[in-house]
Each structure stands twice: as structure tokens, then as C-alpha cells.
Image 1 (tube, rainbow, N blue to C red):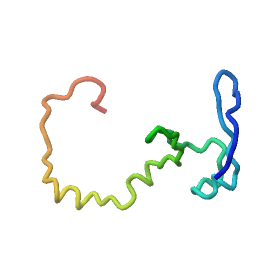
Image 2 (image 1 turned 90 degrees about the horizontal axis):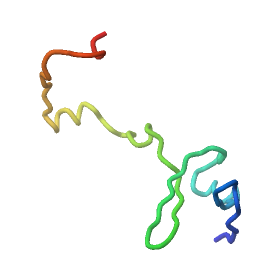
Image 3 (image 1 turned 135 degrees about the horizontal axis):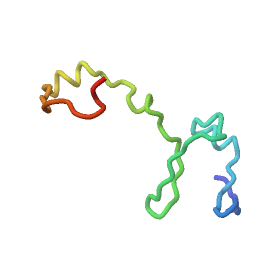
Length: 84
């Protein structure tokens, strides 16, 4: 556990987190790294944000199509700029 202070950052407030603490959660290069901030059970929770690639890791499109039996739809005549 680390004790730190809330500091003024321009018109906002912020906290400083030791690099060693960030490294424990997998944030090796902290500058401009996106994080998710939420409130859970009255606590502020900060966690690394998943990239789009991480979110879809292990996703198999072929299996998805087989399990969801999706069909193509005819939405009618093309209009607007979607025609190339």
C-alpha cells in the first residue's frame, strides 16, 4: 500500500503514483498510457485500459459465424457516399 496526496494539476486534481506500483499492474511506460478509472464499492479503482487488440485476443471469427448463423441482408438500393 502506498500513501500519497491529491495535488492540483491546472484546473483538475490528480495523484502521483510511484513507477514501481504501476509496474506491478503491467504499466511499464506510464506516460500517456490509457487507464480506466471507476468507482466500485465506494473506492476509486484505476486499472490499465485494454487495447482493441487485447479485447479481441482469442476471438475466432470463423467460430463466431458458425455459432451465430448470420445471413447477409439486402438493405435496398445504395444511396449516398457509400458507393465507391
